Amino acid sequence: MTAWEKALGRLRAIGYRVVLDGENLRYTYQGKHLPPPDQIIPLIEVLKIHKAEIINNPYSLIDQTLCEINEGWTQGALEWMKRTRPGEFKKMMALEEEINRFALNRDMNGLNEVLKGYNELMVRGRNRKLISTGMNQCRI
Image (tube, rainbow, N blue to C red; front, side):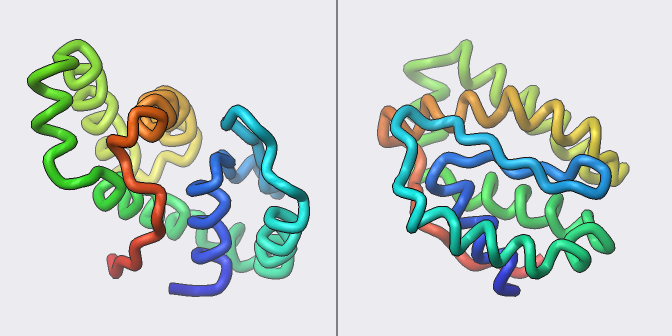
């Protein structure tokens, strides 16, 4: 895992959404309480340093996102969600199908749009302690 992938993963774990918008990286905080700048600024600096690499290989953002989605759920959380929150579970499964479709087609714009809805479910899940916030390493 590269330095910028680690920084991106940490920003996402804290609650930031990071998307590639043309030649720019956009950061949006989606949590409740803004974290201290001394936690965030070094991570953003890493992304700025590696911006050209990120722009030249935007598919690694897709791969990292898919990895985090797959490893983000705590064991048993999906079964619990299916049993106790069938509506949210059904919505999550539909969103994951869309994520996979856009990822396979390498459609960054479509993926960013569908991830907005998925991220809302993830934030609700984190608030309920369903989803781990620790970073997991993965190889794709």
